[in-house]
Image 1 (tube, rainbow, N blue to C red):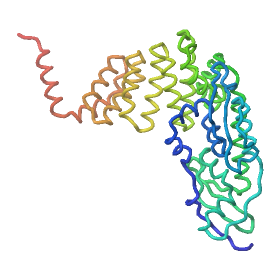
Image 2 (cartoon, rainbow, N blue to C red; image 1 turned 120 degrees about the vertical axis):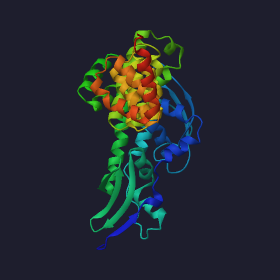
Image 3 (spheres, rainbow, N blue to C red; image 1 turned 30 degrees about the horizontal axis):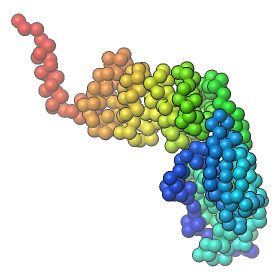
Image 4 (cartoon, rainbow, N blue to C red; image 1 turned 135 degrees about the vertical axis):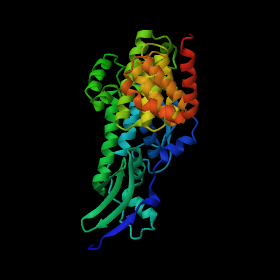
Length: 374
């Protein structure tokens, strides 16, 4: 084959398929929390339909999964209804997904979507968006098939066979992470995670604490979870705070904010609460949602977060929402809390300029009232 043929992939791209299905399943978030979001997606891809879960709250990996398999292309999964522990169920899903298969026949026409799907592989079309890949175009030429993708917004070009292998590697890594995290929550990891966070090693924080959210979300709903000591809850909250901020630093903003909200539930009004609310507010501010950030930041301030950590940011958030009087009040709170004046000059000037003549008249009235009578 001497000519090069280019096939746009917009017609078969599956971006957002998992989230769209989630919108139609009432128990979607609970299943993601218990099974793991990626493993729940794997179950859908392989045709394994979960019919029941018997949750082991002390050891989530021993949770029993009842499932049935429909369809003829479910790879190595058997058709009979089965019950497996969550750990074995995950293994079975991964085994089904990492089986190597040959490329389908090369498509001839760009309009032949079925041929395109068979050539790339339906399983890979569904796996790609799970790992942040958006398919752009397929090129078939003398050197074989190549696929152009956007990976988290960055354009990449891969041989099709290598790209399929990369997706299978992602699936294997998912199982490895799950197996590493199957052990009980180890609170001693929090100290090491704090050290890694100080040194900017966010990936290390994820390695240490990345397994916490799913079992802790389940445990929180149990009587045992509700009866944890204040010290244990604070340690868990601190760890989740580090993990949430680590995810955000690695551009997993939505995931990080979900973890911080879980941390808030463990923190309550305890000693870690102010820091968790502050972390959440900062994330929301950096994601250009100033109005949404006001609530967490005010809560952080009310719980005793240092003035310099919240009030200047609150002033910016208020100003961004056009709440200039509140912005000026935040500046004054910051000054009263000992924030150096030079750090507040810009925010103060902006608020005063926005408030204009009414503020000037009020300040003049206060000045007159403060003068002593002769």
